[in-house]
Length: 260
Image (cartoon, rainbow, N blue to C red; front, side, top):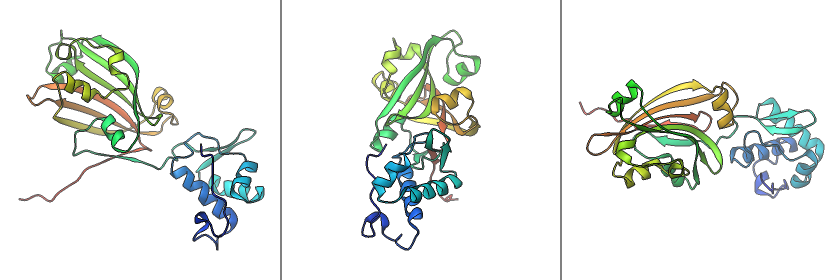
C-alpha cells in the first residue's frame, strides 16, 4: 500500500493537464493511476477519507465525490462499516507471455524484475494415466512425479501449475527440491532440458478452489494451458497443465506472411 500520494497543487505533476477539471475528478484520476500501477491491489482497502484528504490537500467532500465516481465505474467497492476496497480484477499491469519462445515462469518474472515463487500445494509419486503415459512416452507401470504449485510474482498469486515429470529420468526428487525454483532449471541440471514444446490454450472459469488460491472471484476468467515439452533427443520431459489469471496474463504471438 502506498505511503504517499502527491498533493494536488496546481504546479504539481499530478495536476498537470487537469487544472481545468473539477478537483474530485483530479483525485479520482490520481487514485485510478495508483491502482493501475499496482500500488493498491485488488481487494486492498483504500486509506480512509480523512487520510486521503490530508495526503492530497483536498476536502473530505472532494474525496467522497472522487470515490463515488470510481465506484460508479466499478473500480472500487464501498462496504458499509468497512471502508472502500479495490474491486477484483482492477490490476491493469498485465504480463505478456510470448508464445514464440520456450521460457519458464521464473524466467518470465525475472525478466520483468519480479521475484518468482513456487509454493508447493501437493507433491506425489505415482503412476500416470493412460493418456499421460502416451503423451510422455512412458509405460503405465513407470512412475512420475506429480507437482502442483501456486506460482507467484512479487508475492501476488498468478497461476496454479501442475507438472508431471518422469521419476526414472530425473532420479530422487522431493517437495523441497521444487519449492520456489524453476522446474526448467531443475530439468536442465538433471540432463533433461526442454528445447521444444507444444502448448494448447483455452478459456475457463475459476471454480471455488482456483478462485481461493488465485484470489479472484468465483467464475472469474482464467487461461487454462497444457504444455508438452521435449528435450534435444526428442524425448518428452514434462507434461504441464496450468491456470493463469485472465486479468493479469496475455499470451501473445508474432505472425508472419507465408512465403508461398
